[in-house]
Image 1: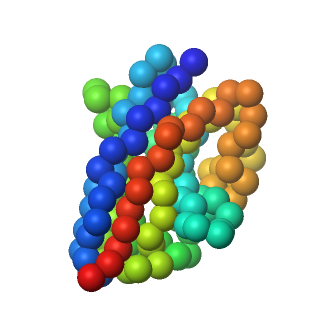
Image 2: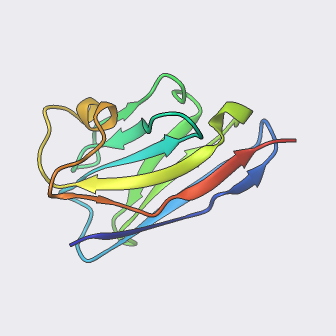
Length: 131
């Protein structure tokens, strides 16, 4: 059983940056596919950045490519999402997820949010981009 706790959300002005953290307990992240997802009011949950179990392969949604970076610190058992050039349309609740069951690709993890018995989700952190 993996527990995930996100932090780092808040209010930021357009053009600003934030770094979200997702701390894992209960198991070590290497071996899990991990991803960051977001959900804005009235919209479906969107996979924006995902990473393979070995940390080598990453996938980014077009909406965040070039602005967001997913990374993992194995010593701290923590996943990060560095967000830059934030815009009002980035306003959403941001979630991290980890899934042990292998998928066909890391892109598949982002495009079809984890729902298997080996999928774990954090509680989410609010990011608001506004002047």
